Length: 152
Image (cartoon, rainbow, N blue to C red; front, side):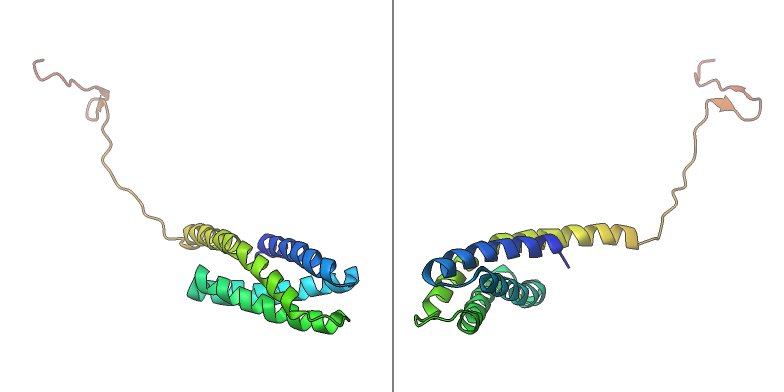
């Protein structure tokens, strides 16, 4: 689990949810915080951990938009008591979250490539021995410097 990516995703989600739902609805900060946490966890585990490695950045971003919209609409209607429809705010919030997802996905892809590169180097414990002939300046039979000049 990449805690740094999860933290970045949570911070982005908190900013978007607090901005949009906090402006349009009279919601408590605790409810907005719970909406942010639950929708972040859902989007991270389904979108970033399952869909991103299998289908790539574009499909994962589209899926994250849908996951964000559904989770924000459902959690908003459960936790926020209002007469106004929550669907439009959830749509705006999902749109802004989907704008940031390609950057986070690029970070996750690069991070996984780096981790694979490091683990493949350390996990492979087969070493190769190099054999070679050493050249010496000493004549082995007489233990004195060898005469390299062919004229002498």
